[in-house]
Image 1 (cartoon, helix red, strand yellow):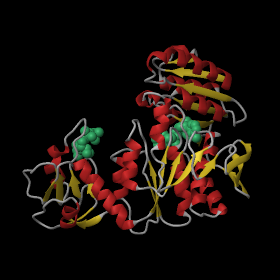
Image 2 (spheres, protein in one colour):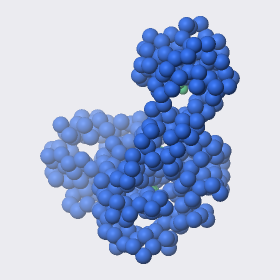
Image 3 (cartoon, helix red, strand yellow):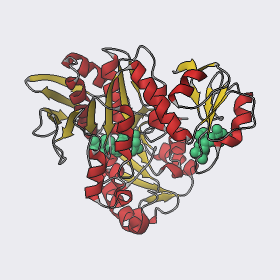
Image 4 (cartoon, helix red, strand yellow):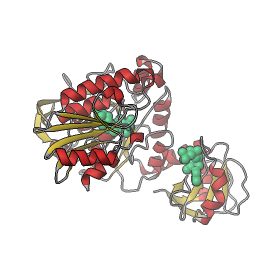
Length: 417
Ligand code: ATP
Ligand code: UDP
Ligand code: MG
Protein backbone atom coordinates (compact mmCIF):
# COMPACT_ATOMS: atom_id res chain seq x y z
CA UNK A 1 0.00 0.00 0.00
CA UNK A 2 1.24 3.46 -0.83
CA UNK A 3 1.86 5.61 2.23
CA UNK A 4 3.22 9.13 1.74
CA UNK A 5 2.34 12.83 1.87
CA UNK A 6 0.33 15.09 -0.39
CA UNK A 7 3.33 17.36 -1.00
CA UNK A 8 5.36 14.40 -2.28
CA UNK A 9 2.55 13.49 -4.66
CA UNK A 10 2.08 17.14 -5.70
CA UNK A 11 5.73 17.19 -6.82
CA UNK A 12 5.30 14.00 -8.83
CA UNK A 13 2.14 15.33 -10.44
CA UNK A 14 3.74 18.74 -11.03
CA UNK A 15 0.94 20.56 -9.27
CA UNK A 16 0.42 22.56 -6.05
CA UNK A 17 -0.67 21.49 -2.64
CA UNK A 18 -1.68 24.06 -0.03
CA UNK A 19 -1.61 21.77 3.02
CA UNK A 20 0.71 18.86 3.55
CA UNK A 21 -1.01 15.78 5.02
CA UNK A 22 -0.04 12.15 5.27
CA UNK A 23 -2.24 9.52 3.68
CA UNK A 24 -2.25 5.78 3.26
CA UNK A 25 -3.67 4.21 0.11
CA UNK A 26 -5.10 5.81 -3.00
CA UNK A 27 -8.85 5.11 -3.34
CA UNK A 28 -11.10 5.78 -6.31
CA UNK A 29 -14.41 4.36 -5.15
CA UNK A 30 -16.63 5.59 -2.30
CA UNK A 31 -18.40 2.25 -2.37
CA UNK A 32 -15.22 0.79 -0.89
CA UNK A 33 -13.08 1.81 2.11
CA UNK A 34 -11.63 5.31 2.30
CA UNK A 35 -10.20 5.79 5.79
CA UNK A 36 -7.04 7.91 5.81
CA UNK A 37 -6.81 7.67 2.02
CA UNK A 38 -6.17 9.98 -0.90
CA UNK A 39 -9.40 10.06 -2.96
CA UNK A 40 -8.56 10.21 -6.65
CA UNK A 41 -11.68 11.20 -8.62
CA UNK A 42 -12.09 9.43 -11.95
CA UNK A 43 -14.70 10.13 -14.61
CA UNK A 44 -16.24 6.94 -15.98
CA UNK A 45 -19.07 5.91 -18.28
CA UNK A 46 -21.61 5.75 -15.46
CA UNK A 47 -20.46 8.24 -12.83
CA UNK A 48 -18.25 11.24 -12.28
CA UNK A 49 -16.46 10.63 -8.98
CA UNK A 50 -16.11 14.42 -8.57
CA UNK A 51 -19.77 14.22 -7.45
CA UNK A 52 -18.73 11.99 -4.54
CA UNK A 53 -16.00 14.11 -2.96
CA UNK A 54 -18.06 15.11 0.11
CA UNK A 55 -19.01 11.48 0.60
CA UNK A 56 -15.36 10.49 0.37
CA UNK A 57 -14.55 13.06 3.07
CA UNK A 58 -17.30 11.72 5.33
CA UNK A 59 -15.86 8.25 4.88
CA UNK A 60 -12.44 9.41 6.05
CA UNK A 61 -10.56 10.54 2.93
CA UNK A 62 -7.85 13.03 3.93
CA UNK A 63 -7.01 14.56 0.54
CA UNK A 64 -8.28 14.76 -3.03
CA UNK A 65 -6.91 14.52 -6.56
CA UNK A 66 -9.37 16.18 -8.94
CA UNK A 67 -9.43 17.61 -12.46
CA UNK A 68 -10.86 20.96 -11.29
CA UNK A 69 -10.94 23.07 -8.11
CA UNK A 70 -13.55 21.57 -5.81
CA UNK A 71 -15.83 23.01 -3.15
CA UNK A 72 -14.34 21.11 -0.21
CA UNK A 73 -11.86 21.95 2.57
CA UNK A 74 -9.65 18.88 2.15
CA UNK A 75 -6.20 19.44 0.62
CA UNK A 76 -6.77 19.12 -3.12
CA UNK A 77 -4.28 18.43 -5.89
CA UNK A 78 -5.70 19.70 -9.18
CA UNK A 79 -4.46 17.98 -12.34
CA UNK A 80 -5.53 18.00 -16.00
CA UNK A 81 -6.39 14.34 -16.13
CA UNK A 82 -6.93 12.17 -13.05
CA UNK A 83 -6.48 8.91 -14.99
CA UNK A 84 -3.00 10.05 -16.03
CA UNK A 85 -2.35 11.10 -12.43
CA UNK A 86 -3.28 7.59 -11.26
CA UNK A 87 -0.80 6.11 -13.75
CA UNK A 88 1.93 8.54 -12.71
CA UNK A 89 1.53 7.76 -9.00
CA UNK A 90 1.42 4.01 -9.68
CA UNK A 91 4.58 4.02 -11.83
CA UNK A 92 6.40 6.13 -9.27
CA UNK A 93 5.43 3.72 -6.50
CA UNK A 94 6.58 0.75 -8.60
CA UNK A 95 9.97 2.42 -9.17
CA UNK A 96 10.38 2.89 -5.42
CA UNK A 97 9.64 -0.74 -4.57
CA UNK A 98 11.45 -2.19 -7.63
CA UNK A 99 10.09 -5.74 -7.70
CA UNK A 100 10.80 -8.05 -10.64
CA UNK A 101 7.70 -7.66 -12.82
CA UNK A 102 6.13 -10.45 -14.83
CA UNK A 103 3.43 -9.35 -17.28
CA UNK A 104 0.90 -11.90 -18.56
CA UNK A 105 -1.53 -11.46 -21.41
CA UNK A 106 -3.24 -13.84 -23.86
CA UNK A 107 -6.69 -14.84 -25.07
CA UNK A 108 -7.25 -17.45 -22.35
CA UNK A 109 -5.61 -18.64 -19.19
CA UNK A 110 -4.20 -15.32 -17.95
CA UNK A 111 -5.72 -15.52 -14.46
CA UNK A 112 -4.91 -19.21 -14.03
CA UNK A 113 -1.30 -18.75 -15.17
CA UNK A 114 -1.00 -15.71 -12.90
CA UNK A 115 -2.28 -17.67 -9.88
CA UNK A 116 0.06 -20.57 -10.57
CA UNK A 117 3.08 -18.34 -11.04
CA UNK A 118 2.33 -16.27 -7.91
CA UNK A 119 1.99 -19.48 -5.89
CA UNK A 120 5.39 -20.65 -7.14
CA UNK A 121 7.13 -17.31 -6.57
CA UNK A 122 5.62 -16.90 -3.11
CA UNK A 123 7.58 -20.00 -2.07
CA UNK A 124 10.75 -18.09 -2.95
CA UNK A 125 9.94 -14.52 -1.85
CA UNK A 126 6.93 -12.25 -1.13
CA UNK A 127 4.96 -11.80 -4.34
CA UNK A 128 2.17 -9.44 -5.33
CA UNK A 129 -0.36 -10.53 -7.94
CA UNK A 130 -3.30 -8.89 -9.68
CA UNK A 131 -6.41 -9.48 -7.59
CA UNK A 132 -9.23 -11.22 -9.44
CA UNK A 133 -9.50 -9.87 -12.95
CA UNK A 134 -8.31 -6.27 -12.41
CA UNK A 135 -6.38 -6.34 -15.66
CA UNK A 136 -7.26 -3.14 -17.54
CA UNK A 137 -6.14 0.52 -17.64
CA UNK A 138 -7.55 1.02 -14.13
CA UNK A 139 -6.88 -2.41 -12.64
CA UNK A 140 -3.18 -2.42 -13.52
CA UNK A 141 -2.27 0.91 -11.84
CA UNK A 142 -4.55 0.05 -8.90
CA UNK A 143 -2.66 -3.22 -8.53
CA UNK A 144 0.71 -1.45 -8.57
CA UNK A 145 -0.50 0.82 -5.77
CA UNK A 146 -0.93 -2.21 -3.50
CA UNK A 147 2.80 -3.04 -3.73
CA UNK A 148 4.47 -3.23 -0.32
CA UNK A 149 8.11 -2.79 0.64
CA UNK A 150 8.63 -6.57 1.05
CA UNK A 151 7.38 -7.56 -2.42
CA UNK A 152 10.17 -8.95 -4.58
CA UNK A 153 7.98 -10.13 -7.45
CA UNK A 154 4.86 -8.64 -9.05
CA UNK A 155 2.75 -10.82 -11.34
CA UNK A 156 0.56 -8.53 -13.42
CA UNK A 157 -2.36 -9.72 -15.57
CA UNK A 158 -3.06 -7.57 -18.63
CA UNK A 159 -6.26 -7.73 -20.66
CA UNK A 160 -6.89 -6.08 -24.00
CA UNK A 161 -9.78 -5.54 -26.36
CA UNK A 162 -8.03 -3.10 -28.67
CA UNK A 163 -4.68 -2.40 -30.29
CA UNK A 164 -2.43 -0.22 -28.15
CA UNK A 165 -3.85 -1.25 -24.77
CA UNK A 166 -1.09 -3.71 -23.84
CA UNK A 167 1.56 -1.28 -25.07
CA UNK A 168 0.07 1.35 -22.77
CA UNK A 169 0.00 -1.02 -19.77
CA UNK A 170 3.62 -2.05 -20.46
CA UNK A 171 4.67 1.59 -20.48
CA UNK A 172 3.41 1.71 -16.87
CA UNK A 173 4.95 -1.53 -15.60
CA UNK A 174 8.08 -2.08 -17.74
CA UNK A 175 7.97 -5.87 -17.38
CA UNK A 176 11.15 -7.87 -16.85
CA UNK A 177 9.42 -11.02 -18.09
CA UNK A 178 6.65 -10.96 -20.71
CA UNK A 179 4.37 -13.80 -21.76
CA UNK A 180 1.38 -14.34 -24.07
CA UNK A 181 -0.40 -17.50 -22.88
CA UNK A 182 -1.99 -18.07 -26.29
CA UNK A 183 -3.69 -16.28 -29.18
CA UNK A 184 -6.95 -18.19 -29.49
CA UNK A 185 -9.71 -16.24 -31.17
CA UNK A 186 -11.38 -14.85 -28.02
CA UNK A 187 -13.24 -11.53 -28.58
CA UNK A 188 -11.94 -11.35 -32.14
CA UNK A 189 -14.70 -8.93 -33.16
CA UNK A 190 -13.30 -6.13 -31.05
CA UNK A 191 -9.88 -6.39 -32.69
CA UNK A 192 -11.09 -6.42 -36.28
CA UNK A 193 -9.47 -9.70 -37.32
CA UNK A 194 -7.06 -12.33 -36.08
CA UNK A 195 -3.91 -10.51 -37.27
CA UNK A 196 -4.78 -7.54 -35.11
CA UNK A 197 -5.52 -9.80 -32.14
CA UNK A 198 -2.02 -11.30 -32.46
CA UNK A 199 -0.49 -7.85 -32.89
CA UNK A 200 -2.32 -6.52 -29.83
CA UNK A 201 -1.14 -9.36 -27.57
CA UNK A 202 2.37 -9.16 -29.03
CA UNK A 203 2.71 -5.59 -27.77
CA UNK A 204 3.76 -7.14 -24.45
CA UNK A 205 7.12 -8.19 -25.93
CA UNK A 206 9.98 -5.69 -26.03
CA UNK A 207 13.75 -5.56 -26.22
CA UNK A 208 13.82 -4.78 -22.50
CA UNK A 209 12.00 -7.94 -21.42
CA UNK A 210 12.76 -11.65 -21.36
CA UNK A 211 10.13 -12.91 -23.77
CA UNK A 212 8.28 -16.20 -23.35
CA UNK A 213 6.23 -17.62 -26.22
CA UNK A 214 3.79 -20.47 -26.81
CA UNK A 215 5.02 -22.78 -29.59
CA UNK A 216 1.48 -22.74 -31.03
CA UNK A 217 1.70 -18.97 -31.63
CA UNK A 218 3.64 -17.09 -34.30
CA UNK A 219 5.86 -15.07 -31.94
CA UNK A 220 9.58 -15.52 -31.55
CA UNK A 221 11.03 -15.12 -28.06
CA UNK A 222 13.79 -16.13 -25.69
CA UNK A 223 12.13 -19.28 -24.30
CA UNK A 224 9.21 -21.32 -25.62
CA UNK A 225 6.68 -23.62 -23.98
CA UNK A 226 4.33 -26.27 -25.34
CA UNK A 227 4.70 -29.01 -27.93
CA UNK A 228 8.22 -28.91 -29.38
CA UNK A 229 9.28 -26.14 -27.01
CA UNK A 230 12.02 -25.71 -24.41
CA UNK A 231 9.53 -26.48 -21.66
CA UNK A 232 6.89 -29.11 -22.38
CA UNK A 233 4.61 -31.74 -20.86
CA UNK A 234 4.85 -35.48 -21.42
CA UNK A 235 2.97 -38.53 -20.11
CA UNK A 236 -0.31 -36.64 -19.74
CA UNK A 237 -3.00 -38.55 -17.84
CA UNK A 238 -5.94 -36.35 -16.80
CA UNK A 239 -4.46 -33.74 -14.44
CA UNK A 240 -1.10 -35.51 -14.09
CA UNK A 241 1.93 -34.96 -16.32
CA UNK A 242 5.72 -34.86 -16.45
CA UNK A 243 7.06 -31.33 -16.53
CA UNK A 244 10.16 -31.16 -18.75
CA UNK A 245 12.45 -28.14 -18.36
CA UNK A 246 15.36 -28.63 -20.74
CA UNK A 247 17.07 -31.72 -19.26
CA UNK A 248 15.18 -31.71 -15.96
CA UNK A 249 11.95 -33.64 -15.44
CA UNK A 250 9.45 -33.83 -12.56
CA UNK A 251 5.99 -35.36 -12.14
CA UNK A 252 3.19 -32.87 -11.37
CA UNK A 253 -0.42 -33.52 -10.32
CA UNK A 254 -2.59 -30.43 -10.65
CA UNK A 255 -5.42 -29.55 -8.32
CA UNK A 256 -7.24 -28.27 -11.42
CA UNK A 257 -9.09 -30.20 -14.10
CA UNK A 258 -8.90 -29.80 -17.88
CA UNK A 259 -5.88 -30.30 -20.15
CA UNK A 260 -5.86 -26.56 -20.90
CA UNK A 261 -4.63 -26.10 -17.34
CA UNK A 262 -1.55 -28.18 -18.14
CA UNK A 263 -0.78 -25.61 -20.81
CA UNK A 264 -1.25 -22.86 -18.23
CA UNK A 265 1.07 -24.77 -15.88
CA UNK A 266 3.72 -24.82 -18.63
CA UNK A 267 3.32 -21.07 -19.11
CA UNK A 268 3.77 -20.44 -15.37
CA UNK A 269 6.68 -22.89 -15.12
CA UNK A 270 8.49 -21.19 -17.99
CA UNK A 271 8.27 -17.81 -16.25
CA UNK A 272 9.46 -19.36 -12.99
CA UNK A 273 12.32 -21.13 -14.77
CA UNK A 274 13.36 -17.85 -16.39
CA UNK A 275 13.56 -16.40 -12.87
CA UNK A 276 15.86 -19.20 -11.72
CA UNK A 277 13.32 -20.97 -9.51
CA UNK A 278 14.11 -24.58 -8.59
CA UNK A 279 11.99 -27.24 -10.34
CA UNK A 280 10.86 -28.67 -6.96
CA UNK A 281 9.39 -25.31 -5.96
CA UNK A 282 7.73 -25.04 -9.37
CA UNK A 283 6.05 -28.40 -8.79
CA UNK A 284 4.98 -27.39 -5.28
CA UNK A 285 3.47 -24.06 -6.42
CA UNK A 286 1.60 -25.68 -9.29
CA UNK A 287 0.16 -28.41 -7.11
CA UNK A 288 -1.28 -26.04 -4.48
CA UNK A 289 -3.07 -23.89 -7.07
CA UNK A 290 -6.84 -24.21 -6.77
CA UNK A 291 -9.61 -23.21 -9.17
CA UNK A 292 -11.04 -19.72 -8.95
CA UNK A 293 -14.61 -19.71 -7.72
CA UNK A 294 -17.01 -20.94 -10.43
CA UNK A 295 -14.30 -21.90 -12.94
CA UNK A 296 -14.20 -25.65 -13.34
CA UNK A 297 -14.33 -25.77 -9.57
CA UNK A 298 -14.87 -29.31 -8.31
CA UNK A 299 -17.30 -29.42 -5.37
CA UNK A 300 -18.14 -32.68 -3.64
CA UNK A 301 -21.62 -32.84 -2.09
CA UNK A 302 -23.34 -35.79 -0.45
CA UNK A 303 -24.98 -36.84 -3.71
CA UNK A 304 -22.84 -35.41 -6.47
CA UNK A 305 -19.47 -34.35 -7.68
CA UNK A 306 -20.32 -30.92 -9.10
CA UNK A 307 -18.09 -29.21 -11.65
CA UNK A 308 -19.05 -25.59 -11.11
CA UNK A 309 -18.15 -23.64 -14.27
CA UNK A 310 -20.91 -21.08 -13.80
CA UNK A 311 -18.65 -18.01 -13.90
CA UNK A 312 -19.43 -17.53 -17.60
CA UNK A 313 -19.88 -19.40 -20.88
CA UNK A 314 -19.09 -19.15 -24.57
CA UNK A 315 -18.73 -21.96 -27.13
CA UNK A 316 -14.97 -22.22 -26.58
CA UNK A 317 -15.07 -22.48 -22.78
CA UNK A 318 -18.08 -24.81 -22.91
CA UNK A 319 -16.21 -27.13 -25.27
CA UNK A 320 -13.25 -27.02 -22.87
CA UNK A 321 -15.50 -27.86 -19.91
CA UNK A 322 -17.16 -30.76 -21.75
CA UNK A 323 -13.70 -32.10 -22.53
CA UNK A 324 -12.63 -31.78 -18.88
CA UNK A 325 -15.72 -33.75 -17.83
CA UNK A 326 -14.33 -36.74 -19.72
CA UNK A 327 -11.55 -37.07 -17.12
CA UNK A 328 -14.13 -38.46 -14.68
CA UNK A 329 -15.46 -42.00 -14.61
CA UNK A 330 -19.03 -42.95 -13.65
CA UNK A 331 -22.31 -41.29 -14.60
CA UNK A 332 -21.96 -37.89 -16.27
CA UNK A 333 -24.59 -35.16 -16.36
CA UNK A 334 -24.40 -31.81 -18.16
CA UNK A 335 -26.64 -28.84 -17.30
CA UNK A 336 -26.32 -25.80 -19.53
CA UNK A 337 -27.91 -22.37 -19.44
CA UNK A 338 -27.71 -20.07 -22.44
CA UNK A 339 -24.51 -18.65 -23.92
CA UNK A 340 -25.30 -14.96 -24.33
CA UNK A 341 -23.96 -12.30 -26.71
CA UNK A 342 -23.28 -14.61 -29.63
CA UNK A 343 -25.01 -12.37 -32.19
CA UNK A 344 -26.29 -13.86 -35.44
CA UNK A 345 -24.60 -17.23 -34.95
CA UNK A 346 -26.33 -17.85 -31.63
CA UNK A 347 -28.84 -20.46 -32.86
CA UNK A 348 -26.23 -22.47 -34.77
CA UNK A 349 -23.71 -22.36 -31.90
CA UNK A 350 -26.29 -23.54 -29.36
CA UNK A 351 -27.19 -26.37 -31.71
CA UNK A 352 -23.54 -27.40 -32.06
CA UNK A 353 -22.79 -27.23 -28.33
CA UNK A 354 -26.03 -29.10 -27.58
CA UNK A 355 -24.93 -31.96 -29.84
CA UNK A 356 -21.51 -32.05 -28.19
CA UNK A 357 -23.07 -31.99 -24.71
CA UNK A 358 -25.27 -34.96 -25.59
CA UNK A 359 -22.20 -36.91 -26.77
CA UNK A 360 -20.23 -35.93 -23.67
CA UNK A 361 -22.76 -36.98 -21.02
CA UNK A 362 -25.22 -39.68 -20.06
CA UNK A 363 -27.94 -37.08 -19.57
CA UNK A 364 -28.11 -33.50 -20.88
CA UNK A 365 -30.37 -30.86 -19.34
CA UNK A 366 -30.96 -27.31 -20.53
CA UNK A 367 -32.22 -24.47 -18.38
CA UNK A 368 -33.97 -21.19 -19.08
CA UNK A 369 -34.44 -18.86 -22.02
CA UNK A 370 -32.73 -19.06 -25.41
CA UNK A 371 -31.77 -22.70 -24.95
CA UNK A 372 -34.35 -24.39 -27.21
CA UNK A 373 -31.65 -25.13 -29.81
CA UNK A 374 -29.64 -27.18 -27.32
CA UNK A 375 -32.42 -29.78 -27.54
CA UNK A 376 -31.70 -30.97 -23.98
CA UNK A 377 -34.23 -32.10 -21.37
CA UNK A 378 -35.58 -28.68 -20.59
CA UNK A 379 -36.45 -26.91 -17.32
CA UNK A 380 -37.55 -23.34 -16.72
CA UNK A 381 -37.22 -23.44 -12.94
CA UNK A 382 -33.91 -23.98 -11.17
CA UNK A 383 -35.72 -25.35 -8.11
CA UNK A 384 -37.59 -27.93 -10.19
CA UNK A 385 -34.41 -28.87 -12.02
CA UNK A 386 -32.55 -29.30 -8.70
CA UNK A 387 -35.38 -31.44 -7.31
CA UNK A 388 -35.35 -33.55 -10.46
CA UNK A 389 -31.57 -34.08 -10.33
CA UNK A 390 -31.67 -35.00 -6.64
CA UNK A 391 -34.56 -37.44 -7.17
CA UNK A 392 -33.24 -39.15 -10.29
CA UNK A 393 -29.46 -39.34 -10.02
CA UNK A 394 -26.93 -40.35 -7.42
CA UNK A 395 -23.10 -40.24 -7.28
CA UNK A 396 -22.96 -38.62 -10.70
CA UNK A 397 -20.51 -35.96 -11.90
CA UNK A 398 -22.58 -32.90 -12.83
CA UNK A 399 -21.12 -30.15 -15.02
CA UNK A 400 -23.05 -26.89 -14.61
CA UNK A 401 -22.40 -23.92 -16.87
CA UNK A 402 -24.01 -20.90 -18.54
CA UNK A 403 -23.46 -17.23 -19.21
CA UNK A 404 -22.91 -15.12 -16.12
CA UNK A 405 -26.29 -13.41 -16.44
CA UNK A 406 -28.12 -16.76 -16.38
CA UNK A 407 -26.78 -17.27 -12.82
CA UNK A 408 -26.35 -21.02 -12.99
CA UNK A 409 -24.49 -20.69 -9.67
CA UNK A 410 -27.96 -20.60 -8.08
CA UNK A 411 -28.48 -24.17 -9.24
CA UNK A 412 -25.14 -25.15 -7.69
CA UNK A 413 -26.30 -23.62 -4.39
CA UNK A 414 -29.58 -25.55 -4.53
CA UNK A 415 -27.73 -28.83 -5.08
CA UNK A 416 -25.33 -28.09 -2.21
CA UNK A 417 -28.19 -27.80 0.30
P1 ATP B 1 -10.39 -13.26 -18.75
O1 ATP B 1 -10.23 -12.76 -20.16
O2 ATP B 1 -11.80 -13.44 -18.33
O3 ATP B 1 -9.57 -12.51 -17.74
P2 ATP B 1 -8.37 -15.31 -18.49
O4 ATP B 1 -7.51 -15.19 -19.70
O5 ATP B 1 -7.86 -14.72 -17.23
O6 ATP B 1 -9.84 -14.80 -18.79
P3 ATP B 1 -8.83 -17.77 -17.00
O7 ATP B 1 -9.67 -17.04 -16.03
O8 ATP B 1 -7.54 -18.32 -16.52
O9 ATP B 1 -8.58 -16.90 -18.30
O10 ATP B 1 -9.67 -18.95 -17.65
C1 ATP B 1 -10.97 -18.68 -18.15
C2 ATP B 1 -11.45 -19.81 -19.06
O11 ATP B 1 -10.67 -19.86 -20.25
C3 ATP B 1 -11.31 -21.20 -18.45
O12 ATP B 1 -12.43 -21.53 -17.67
C4 ATP B 1 -11.19 -22.07 -19.69
O13 ATP B 1 -12.47 -22.34 -20.23
C5 ATP B 1 -10.45 -21.20 -20.69
N1 ATP B 1 -8.99 -21.43 -20.70
C6 ATP B 1 -8.11 -21.19 -19.69
N2 ATP B 1 -6.86 -21.49 -20.04
C7 ATP B 1 -6.91 -21.91 -21.31
C8 ATP B 1 -5.92 -22.36 -22.24
N3 ATP B 1 -4.63 -22.41 -21.93
N4 ATP B 1 -6.35 -22.74 -23.48
C9 ATP B 1 -7.63 -22.69 -23.81
N5 ATP B 1 -8.61 -22.27 -22.98
C10 ATP B 1 -8.27 -21.89 -21.73
N1 UDP C 1 -17.74 6.14 -7.96
C1 UDP C 1 -17.69 6.40 -6.61
N2 UDP C 1 -18.86 6.26 -5.88
C2 UDP C 1 -20.03 5.86 -6.43
C3 UDP C 1 -20.07 5.62 -7.82
C4 UDP C 1 -18.89 5.75 -8.56
O1 UDP C 1 -16.64 6.74 -6.07
O2 UDP C 1 -21.03 5.74 -5.71
C5 UDP C 1 -16.50 6.28 -8.75
C6 UDP C 1 -16.03 4.95 -9.33
O3 UDP C 1 -15.26 4.20 -8.40
C7 UDP C 1 -15.16 5.39 -10.49
C8 UDP C 1 -15.80 6.70 -10.92
O4 UDP C 1 -16.73 7.07 -9.88
O5 UDP C 1 -13.82 5.63 -10.06
C9 UDP C 1 -16.52 6.58 -12.23
O6 UDP C 1 -17.44 5.52 -12.13
P1 UDP C 1 -17.79 4.61 -13.41
O7 UDP C 1 -18.52 5.47 -14.37
O8 UDP C 1 -16.56 3.93 -13.87
O9 UDP C 1 -18.82 3.58 -12.79
P2 UDP C 1 -18.59 2.14 -12.15
O10 UDP C 1 -18.32 1.22 -13.29
O11 UDP C 1 -17.41 2.24 -11.20
O12 UDP C 1 -19.88 1.84 -11.43
MG1 MG D 1 -8.57 -13.11 -16.15
